[in-house]
Length: 122
Image (cartoon, rainbow, N blue to C red; front, side, top):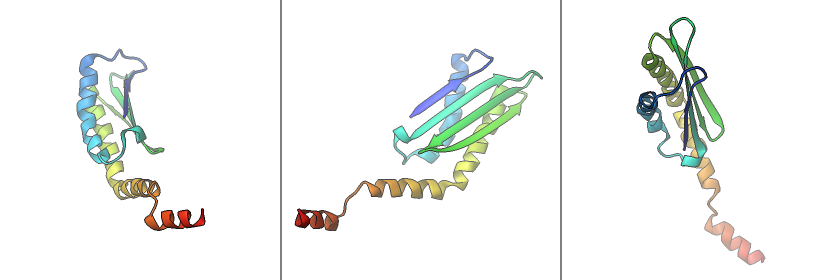
């Protein structure tokens, strides 16, 4: 899985990366059964001009994108709010995500009947 933590106007310190990685654990709980190569997370942490902070979180799962953008007076609280928004979106779509993944997984399997029909025709 690719987790990208960036900023447009602030240098990202190690403590900011650690904070983002700790908070993203909440989202990762929803994505346990999905293969690593089908998951991407992007976090953008910025300082806004009015002494606030903006956190943008984008989660891509098998091509479907979940996005949240939050402003608050501290970087941590804006990040927490954005993570909570993504968490709500994932919770709402949990059945769809699991169903889509299960359908993709099952499509890779070939039934014994299909195999026997194929060998008979050859």
